[in-house]
Length: 557
Image (spheres, helix red, strand yellow):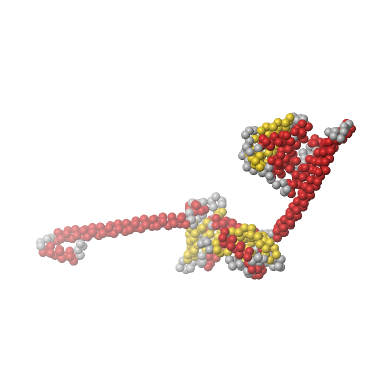
C-alpha cells in the first residue's frame, strides 16, 4: 500500500508528539520513499515481463500462421509474387523450385530482370502492354504467356494479379500468382486436334453417319448420308425427313424391328433394308447403330452409320442367278455324260467281247499278222473303256447320282475280293504284290462298292507308273478308323506336282510320264468318292523313289 505525503506528514506530526526527533522522522520518510520506489520498480518489471511474454506469444503465433500460410501456398502449386512498382523490386513465394526450377534466392529480383530472363521473347511485348493497361485502368492483371525454367524449357503460365494504390491514387505495387497450365494447354490442343480430326472424318466419310431421336427425327447427319438418300445438304435431309419410319423405309415395319433390336441389345450391326431416295428410287442399305444412354441408363438417342449396298445386292442376285444357271447346266452336262457314257459302254463291250473271242481262236486260228492288230485294238478298246468308266463315275458324282449304300464291311474280306478281281492286272504287270493286313481289324460301316473303286484306282495308278519292283497294299487300325495304304516302287512324283494331282484332268508335268497316257481323272474321282464316304487321302512321294497313298475312313461311317 502506498502512502501520500499528507499521510506521511500526519504520521510525522504524531511521531513528534510521541517524542521522536525530526531526524528520526526524516529517516523513516526516506525509508518509506525507498519502499515506494521499490514497489514502482517491481510493478514496472512485472508489466515489462508481461509485455515481453505477450510479444513472444504473438511472435510464436505469427510464425505458426506464417508456416501454415506457406504450406497452404505450397499446396496450391501456385507461385506468388509482390512487385513494387516504384522500386521495381519483386518478391517471390510458393513452390518456385518445383515450377520454375529456381530456389527463391536465385530468382530475378526486379521486373526488368524477370522480363529479360524468364519471359519468352515472343511474349514480352504482350506482357509489357498488359502491365501498361493494368496500371492505366487500375484493373486486374491477367495474361497467359511462356516462362523459361532454369533448365531451359518453357512452360505456359496463367498470371493473375491485382494493383494497389496509395492515398493519391498512384499505383504502388502489384500482388499476384502464377499457375502452370502447360499440361492443360497441351490437353486442350490435343482435344482440339481430335475434334477437328473427328469432324473431318465425319464430314468426309464415305458412310453415312447419323444421330436420331427416339421418335424418328434426325439430330445430325453428315454429307455422305445426304448423298446416299439423294439430298443436296444435311440440312435439307433433316428438314425433309421428319418421320424416318414412315418416309424412308419401303417396308415401314423395318424401322420398328430396328428400334426393337436397339432397345433389346443396345447395338445393331449389318441391318439390311430397302429405302426410298429423294427421287423415289429404291436402294438397299445396311445400318449399324448403338443406343446412347445417360448415367442412369435412360435412353437419350441413337447413333450409327449407313452404307449403300445396292451394287453389292445386285451383284449377289446376279451371282445367285448365274450360280443356279451354272448348276443347272452342270447337271444337264453330267446327265448327258452319264447317258452317253452308258450308251458308249454297250457297243464297246461288244467290241471287246468279239476281240477276245478272235484272240482266243474261237473263230479259227490266227496268224501273227492278225494277232498283233487285234491286240492293239483290244488294248485301245480297254483304255477307251477305262476313260468312259471314269467319265461315267465323274458325271454320276457331279450329278449326285451315286447314293451311299453302307453296310458292315470286314477289311480283310474286302481286300481279298480286290486281290482276286485284279489278278489279271497283277499277272500282266509282272510286279511283286504284297497284301499286308494287320489283325485284328474291326468291322466298320462303309459303301464297299465305292471303296473298291478307290482302291482299284490307286492300284491301277501304281501299276501304271511302276516298271519294276513291287506294290504293297496294307491295312491297319488308325485314329479311331481304318487306314488303307498303297505303296509302289515306281517313278514317284516331284514335290512341286503333289499339290495338283487330285485336281481333275491334271497329270504330272513330266515328259517322261507322257508315255503312260490316262485322262487325269482317276485321283480326282478317288478324292471325290472319299469325300462322299467321309474319309481322307494323303500322299508321300519322292521323284524316282516311289509313292505311298494313305486312305483313312472313320470307324462308324
